[in-house]
Image: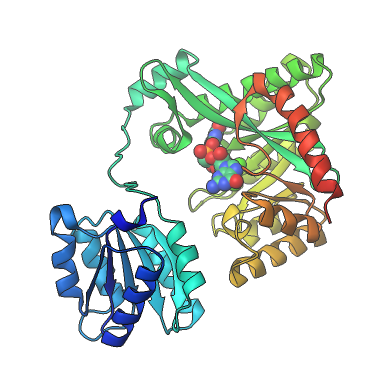
Length: 403
Ligand code: C2E
Ligand code: CA
Ligand code: CA
């Protein structure tokens, strides 16, 4: 990265801080630095077209327009750069502010407490990447008819993401994640599919297709000597239909796949007024020896009441409490409590969103049963799994020997 070319604006009402930060930036090799002492003039820089800043060092505490109000203005002015927060405020407040800013799709490079130290400033700036505009890459919206045709034409396929035993690294299960192989647009992800299906009464057809494909895949892997459980995501709307349990039983029976190999992941996607039908469906599935998992645990969609009413075999701690839990005290507390709760109730506990070595170390140290995440393996087509397992075995052996 050419540091001299990156345009940085320092926004701080204290002139002493402005000077000091500008000096530190110059020491680090950043020479296109401007300073200003209030939000209004900063917005003029933002609107300046070619010279608009790519990074703003933002002091949250300013008279007049404060940092939070300034962020709202940045959104209105379509700011496309990143922010680096500088504040004398306590860490929790800084964290809250960062979440808020990120909710507006503005990347936050880091949080610096005053006094600012050079190595911290340098480390935060190293995270900067040239223009990344999440809100500009508008996603195509498909119609219900297009999705319906895609389901009928079997354009929906399953990718599979591995889940591994933390203690041994063994690959015991995979989660089926739906993808739409669009003939023109390439691979389409669930965020453009699931809601559309739920809102247009297509979710039953979609889930049935995913489930049948998953069951056939279990059988195919068994033929290759690979005994794997497959997890399938179930929408609450599926559970509202009285014929769903029969469909699952029949689909497994048709391929002669034992129900123990099929895990149904459930999350409460919306408030259920009538709990009786979902409860009946889940109880019948359980009675037929299918395994049940409570997904996204801790997010409010998957609540404690569900745990009391339904006997789940597995609890998946939501990834927002796993990734970075070693840095974030609150996430860590929620992670620990969820893990303890799952174990106390005799469930297997899965940590989702294991993205880096820190996360993996945490799940190993904390005695979590299973782990899933990009650090271990990304969702992949079924055909790639066997090769992936061999590669993972090599990697897992290294971790096993590390302290
Ligand atoms: P989910 O059930 O929580 O599935 C995990 C999602 O997290 C997947 O996204 C996966 O690719 C992603 N993921 C896995 N590891 C990591 C990680 O380390 N870091 C991060 N940041 N993400 C990770 P995907 O495939 O885009 O699916 C999104 C959601 O769509 C799923 O969330 C699930 O709720 C829903 N979904 C996917 N397939 C189906 C389906 O067949 N039926 C239904 N009803 N919902 C589905
Ligand atoms: Ca899931
Ligand atoms: Ca999940």
